[in-house]
Structure formats: C-alpha cells, structure tokens
Amino acid sequence: MNASAILGVAAVAVMTSACAPQPATPRPDEDAIRSALNTELAKLAPTFAAKDAAAVANMFTQDATWILPDASTYTGHAAIEAGAKNVFAAFPPMSIQGVVIDRLIVISDSEAVTFSHQNYTMTEKGKQPASRVNPFADYWKKGTDGAWRVAYEVNADGPAPAAPKQP
Image (cartoon, rainbow, N blue to C red):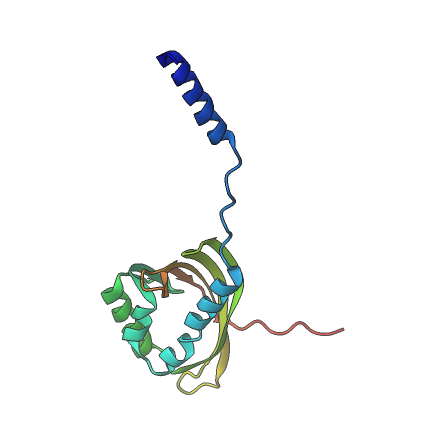
C-alpha cells in the first residue's frame, strides 16, 4: 500500500470514530446531592444557636462570598467569620425552625445552586417574639474532601408572610 492510500484509510477511520455515537455521560444523582445539601443546611440551627462564628465560616469555601440582607458583603473565611461575629453581636438570639430547599439546580456532580428559605423567630428587647423568613440563594461546590460548601450566598429577610385567609 502506498502512503496516500494509508492516509486515506486513516482519515476514513478517524472520521468514522468521530461520528460514532459517544457513550452518554451519567447524570449526577440529584437525590444524593439534595440529601448532602440538606445535611449541610441542617447545621445552621445549631450553629446559630451556639453563636459559633467559626462554624459559620466553615460552611463556606475558602474564597466564598456571603452577602447579608443589608448588602453587607464578606469574602473569604476570615471575613465571613468576622461577619458572623458581627451578626451575633448585633442581633438578639434567634431560633431557626427549619431550612427548606425550594429549588435545586444540579450543575454537575460537584456544583449546584439552591434557592432556600429558613423560618426563624427573633425576640428583640422589650418586644414580642417575631416570626421571620430568610430567603437565600447558594452556589455550592463539593471539595476534594467530599464536603459540600457554599461558594456564594445572597440573603434577603423580612417578616414571615401571613397565611392566606380561607374563604
């Protein structure tokens, strides 16, 4: 066989393999990711109850950004820990009743976005306890250690909406 014939056969082989159906990439296990993220979010109540600023920071990646309802922004572990200390010092104790993932968007087996809310009660000095809701969005990354951490979080806040009146 001459060189041009060999090149022709090689070109046909390359084109055939390039056009052949590729194996499907398995989809990430959304239920497993949701379960892992719920486990992480379940840490919020005890962390806030203990006013543990270091534990708050450890829920984030090293270079994470945390944006609070008043637009205060903290980037990096040290800043997030300092921000958590400020929150704990500035606000009266709060009791978190639960955190719910309202929407999960799985990007890959190591990245996800959640839209969540937490209901909590805060008792300000001289006032009755007030129920509030904190909607927030998180961009999650799974670390090389297998732990899911928040890389970017944006919070909102406000009084808990009243239940609709029944007719």
